Amino acid sequence: MPDWPARAVRGMHDLLPGAASRRRTLEQRIITVLDRYGYREIRFPVVEHSAVFSGMGESSDVVQKQMYAFADRGGTQLSLRPEGTAGCVRAGIEHGLFRSSEPQRLWYLGPMFRHERPQQGRLRQFDQIGVETYGLAGPDIDAELLLIGNRIWEQLELPPLELELNTLGTPEDRARYRQQLQSYFLASADQLCKLDRERLQRNPLRLLDSKDATTVALCQDAPDIVDSLCTESREHFAALCALLQQCGVVFRVNRRLVRGLDYYTATVFEWLLPGQGAQNAICAGGRYDLLVEGMGGPQVPAIGFALGLERIAGLRTETTPAEHPHAYLVIAGDPAPGMALAETVRSHLPWLRLLVHCGGGNLKRQLRRADRSGADYALILGATEYADATIALKSLRTDQPQQHLPWQELATHLARLYGRALADSPADD
Ligand code: HAM
Image 1 (cartoon, helix red, strand yellow):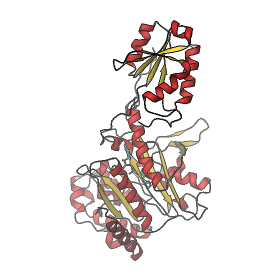
Image 2 (cartoon, helix red, strand yellow):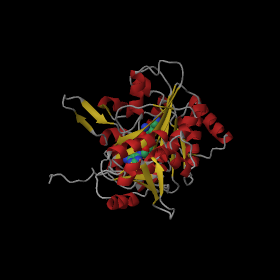
Image 3 (spheres, helix red, strand yellow):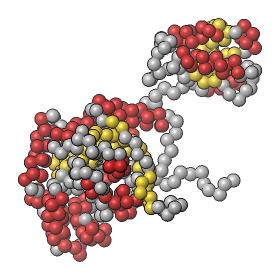
C-alpha cells in the first residue's frame, strides 16, 4: 500500500466520464460564440516566471496570498497561473503580436490555480475561458465584449445574470480617488476590522467591496469615484453606456465595483447571479490599458474578461451527450481478424462508436459485457462466422431477429441502420 491517500488535493476536483463530456459540450458552445465574433484561440503555459504575475498588483489578494509559487530544481522562481491575462500578455510580447497594427481578438481555455479557502464556488484549481483584445481603445470594443458575454448566456440558456458596470478612470483619476477614500476611511480607522485596516493601507479601493458590516455602513457616505474622473474617462464611460442602451443591453452602474486585480483602468464589469453578491461572479473583466507596456511591451490598449466554467456548469442541468457505443464486437478465438475488420469499418464510418471486446472469455461473457456497455448492437464473430467470412448482427435493445452479413457489407449495413452515408462526418450527437 502506498503511504499517500488516493485523494485529490483540497479544492481541486476530478471530472469523471459523463461530467467531463458535459463540460466539453459547455466549452464547445462558448467557443462557438467566440468563433462567430472572430476571436482566435491562444494557448500558453500553466507555469510562468513568478515575475509575470507581479503586474497583476502587489496589493491584490491573488498575488499577495493565493499564488502557488515555488522555486524549481534550478532555483528559478515560478508560479502556477492564477489567471490568464498576464500570461496572455507575456506571450503576446514575446512573439511580437502587439507589434502589428492589427487589433488582436483572442481567447483561451484552461486551468487556473489560486490558494483560496475552498468553499462553495471557490476552488483552488478551476477552469476559465478568457477573452482578451489588444489594440482597440474605444468604447465600441468594450461594448462588443459585453455583447459577447450576453450572447454566451443566451446560448447557454442560463438564468438571468445581472451585469454591473463601472469605470476606474485613468491611473491619475484612480490615484486621486484612492487618496480621497483613504482620508475618508482614516477618520474611522479604529472602527475597521483588521483586514480592512490592512486594505486601507494597501488598497483603499478594496474597502468598497468589504463584507464587514461597519465598513459596509461607512461606504454609504464614502466619496464617489465619479467626482474624481477626468473628462476623457467620463466621455468613454458615457459613450459605452449609450452604445449598450442602443444595443438593448441591460446593465446597472455600480460605483462600488472595483475588482480585485490591480491592472484595471477605466471600464470594469461583472456578471452576477442575482442575490449571490460579487463573491460569486460568473464572469468578470475590464480594461487594462497599461499592462502591456508595464510588462515591457509597446503601448497597447487592452480589454478582456474571464468566465468561471465551474460556476457556469453549476447553473446548468446539462444532458450528457451520447457516449454509449453504437456497436460492440464480440470475438471468439484469435482477435486479429476481428480487430482488422473493426478498423475497416471505422475507416468507412467516421461517426461510428465501435467498441472491440478485449480480454478474451467465452461468447456468453462477452455478450454480457456488450449489453452492459450500452451498445445498440452486438457484432459477433464466432467460429462459424470466421469460417464463412460473415458476421452476426444482434440488436441488444430490440427484438429484431439476428442477421448474418458478409464482412464487406457490414459498414454499408450499419450506415443504413443509422440513416447515415458511408463517408459521413463524425457524429455530433
Ligand atoms: P477574476 O475576477 O479573478 O478575473 O476571475 C474571473 C472569473 O473566474 C470569476 O468571475 C469566476 O467566475 C472565476 N473564478 C475566479 N476565482 C475562482 C475560484 N477560486 N474558483 C472558481 N472560479 C473562480 C480574472 O481572472 C481576470 N483575468 C479577468 C480578465 C480578463 N480581465 C481582463 N481580461
